[in-house]
Length: 486
Image 1: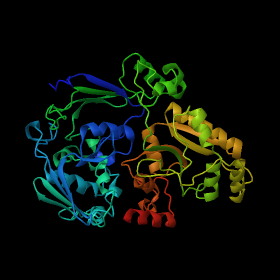
Image 2: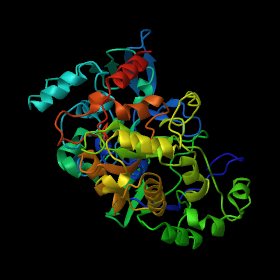
Image 3: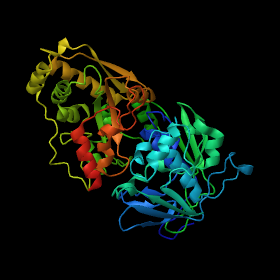
């Protein structure tokens, strides 16, 4: 198949590795990158993000109309989309997608249940979202679900917003807005963590927890390429879960993997002629791709903990860490020092005028004294939790050394599985941890919402999904809310 210029080859297997295991593949529970990458092959939403341009494109929605005041979105669905064949359907045959499925998925996104970690995406924004959530807390769900989400006919849905939000279309590309059928949740419930039923190009075939996951081609997939050839081209995607980057690199060199994320820092010189030459195509055996990502690696404090509730201590730690040295030497140039705040620079957001933290150990020591500690050795030993990854451990050790040299603070490093780390910081069980944030959509809102105080649960024992550091600052919240409305 295919035209003369672009011959299409069908079949084959694509092999890759994730050094971190997935936590959950259920759309409303996904809070980590490996889970998101896998689920994106299985599920789809109304809209999607063009991976090259980051522009919003239609996906399950064939047509989108937005009212002049920006508060009403009307979606017309494609009439040729079917869910995967699955035992949750009669005769195990996937049925056609309808607007009722979108309504069901979005109502559940606005409900209080153990599988839903992402209500904040619709909270305060969609008309009736908060009311429906509260009704599910009281275990008396409002009849009709979220009243701002309305099914007009089998293929048409309307969403009403409390205000116009310029980034709402971007929110709809989020994995939490993937669509799934009622039948699947009624059959599998929390087991939708691995029992996935979507409309995507691939379906789960086999899972061996912690070892590998195998996706197979959805034979009834609805999309075609620009030349009318049916998608996908591949038959199988095989994902292994090997935590050791050196083992991963070894398998790549043996030809057992087609792609790896991030080269091990200490292996770069043996793989690449040099990083600069590799970027210019100096490694004909491999294709090396480097792009600035909409992501940040950061270390977070629990703001209501006994130690880090003191702002002076938090600032002292910040000023005692040399970010440029970490990037230049520990990461061998793989990264950009975050000296202009947490939000990276990207098209549509210029962070150059933002004043972040400099390296200033003298001021850091003064702040520590202001906090009541003559030296960092007066502080109790602090544990830094990081997930298993060579680069994470190397960075943690460098930060450990800087904090001891510049402040006298003793840091103990606790290396644990990523899933365990997530549970630890979400429930406020650790005071100091390493994590990362990959933007859900290309807007500063995706990063800054991590610090919106109204996303912190009142119950300290409850999981704080949207704001795990539990940072609360009235001035920040006011600016954040004004920025949303502008």
